[in-house]
Image 1 (cartoon, rainbow, N blue to C red):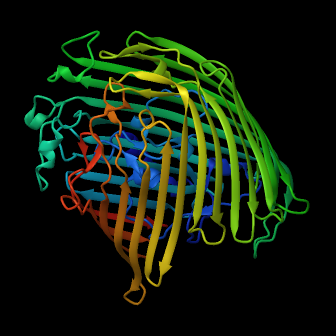
Image 2 (cartoon, rainbow, N blue to C red):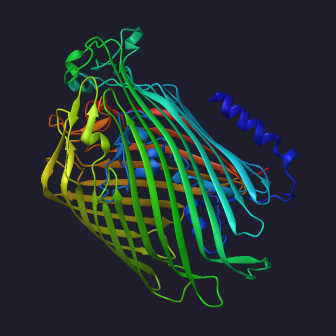
Length: 632
């Protein structure tokens, strides 16, 4: 991996010698996501160079706000907010282990006339290292290449808790001279490990202690110095994604300021994608010092060495068409039809299988901006024709209404989804099951409203019904609940501004009709309050404030390192504990520096400070971070 990164870095440095186009002039780069290549025009987004949320370096906070992990960055994690939308297609069932992976669907493709570098580096106690590095530039005016690298490493505060993750993405984006063809490529590596300590043996011993040195006994550890050499979950992922676009339409000369360059109005097109992916997991406990922790033993009573492998190839073809206003470049509606084939191989100890999925997906999607219309209906439908997920479907209808100040949206959906593969079929040294569960079905009604010009206000209310829900019981075994469960979830966000003071509010309320099976905190919040001012003749922009996250107490799930799943437990509640972080951010031109005091209220707000049952939150710690964007 290091050699690959070094080669990519040298290639990036040497490309000025290879470029044949003149890229003179300094300009901030722009970017597009893959889905934006469906657009009828070449509108690109500018990168965000503001100081906003500079101290929120943890990807889980950015992604979920409220989440559950094992008390250390890089450890298995899941959102605490209910999401009824299933992922279409085949799913292995190891999402908790993949939360920090780089993925093709999250990729950005840049246009950078000058070399662009974005470095984010965070260092802290317990050997915390967080490094995000992006290098990109245009080899020519129509071809961009780059590398996106992330390193996460943290020793953790307790025995056998270290996490270590390496992620690299090499990408390129090319567009033909006549603008009728585009090619996107992603090559991604994710690898690393997370040490598994199985949680504290006795929570009360931990809660009786104060200060940073709360070293108490854990369920799983090794026989090395200070418990080293204990169980680990290792993972490795390699994926390649390519997308090709062929555009059909007429050329037009729109006038945007002084820009009168010829532009193709892409009224229709074809997209082809190819994905190749290998995914491997390994759980090993070489010593089995605590055999009582495990459910049972099927193959070996001296050690556990369980491997799991997936190989997948996906091909998809999409035909799409834009309904464009006459004598304009504005899109009213986009319609498309996709046919996808998935070939999957799964390898476990004694259970090796192959599947082929074929599914279709069609939609009519309105465009909500730059049109004279106020009402926008749409529909999105998916159905799996054959394979492991045969019979899966999802149907979503939605409508948006735009007034002078607000966008009102209503969405109704229904879906049926086959269980993730590992829920039905699992083989390991400690667990074996073979299930034929029914599909889980979900119906939802969502109403949402948000401000158009002022983006500080948004309110959504969703009513959901889930049938044949599958959960993992306290013995680590999957169980299907035959009746229906109703879930109400609401979210509210609002930003307030008083002079130099800012308050960003995010509130959630969730209610489930069966709290014994579907475990969710009922209320949660994430607040950012800070004072912002320009100093030293307005050269330096500074922020000083606090972040607060909180959710109500509930019987949260605990993580099983063998099954790699969060499972029920009924012994302890976590939550009802605010986590307060203090921060000081400052920015000079493109350089951002932050000082952060994580969990500043440790030992001051009670002792129920857990991120998962028997997995304490990290103790208070000082973090220093810098983010530097260089445009040449």
